[in-house]
Length: 227
Ligand code: DX5
Ligand code: ZN
Picture 1 (cartoon, rainbow, N blue to C red):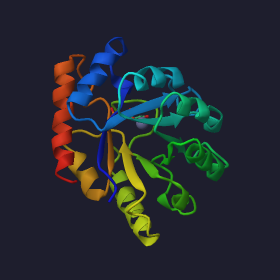
Picture 2 (tube, helix red, strand yellow; picture 1 turned 135 degrees about the vertical axis):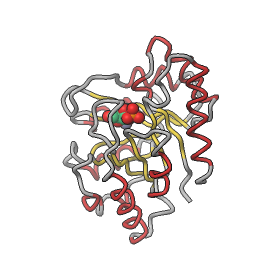
Picture 3 (cartoon, rainbow, N blue to C red; picture 1 turned 30 degrees about the horizontal axis):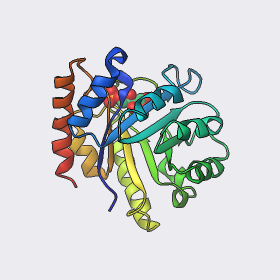
Picture 4 (tube, rainbow, N blue to C red; picture 1 turned 90 degrees about the horizontal axis):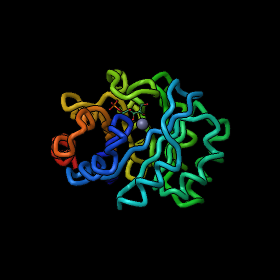
C-alpha cells in the first residue's frame, strides 16, 4: 500500500514567519512539506527556488516535495536534490524528454513525480508510469494558491487509479492531488483514490502558529481515517 500523506504547501504562508509556521504544521501532524516553485514563464507567477527549499530542509526533518512549475526543469534538478528535496515533480507539459528527466531525478536519489494540468488527459501517462514514483493531478490551473477546486479532477483521479491497477502499479505509484483542497472536499479526493494530499490556503489562512497547527490537525484527522 502507498502511504497516505498530508503535505501543506507553504505558498500561502506568511514568509516573515515561515520557520514558526512550518514547525506548527509539523506539530499538527503534517507528513512533509510541498514546495511550489514558479518561474513566471511556465506559470504567471514567481515564487522561490532551491535556496528557500534548502533553508527549510536544513532545519526540519521531514519529507520535502518540490513541485517544479518552471520551464526547463531538468537544468535545476541537481540543485533541488542538493538542497534537500526528497521528491521532485515536473510537469508533463514542460519536458519533451520526460523519461530522461524522471531517470535523472531517481539517479540523484529523489522520488520522481510527473504532474498533469487540468486539461491534460491521464492517458498521456501510460508510458511513463512504470518509471515514476508518483503522479500529481492538478485540481486547479497551476500558478496561484487559493483557487477553486475543479471538480472534474475527481474523475481523473479515479481514471488514474484504474490505469495503475491495470498496469499492476497501484501499490508502488502514489497519487498526489493539489489545488483547492478544503475541509469540505478532502474526503471526495481521498475517496477518489488520492494518497498524498496538498493543502495550501486552508492551512496557512492564518499567520498565527496555533491556528496553523489546528488547521493541520483537522486535515490530518480526516486523512487518518483513510489509511
Ligand atoms: C498551485 C500550487 C498548489 C496550491 C495549493 O499552483 O501548485 O500547491 O497553491 O494551494 P491551495 O490549497 O490554496 O489551492
Ligand atoms: Zn503545488
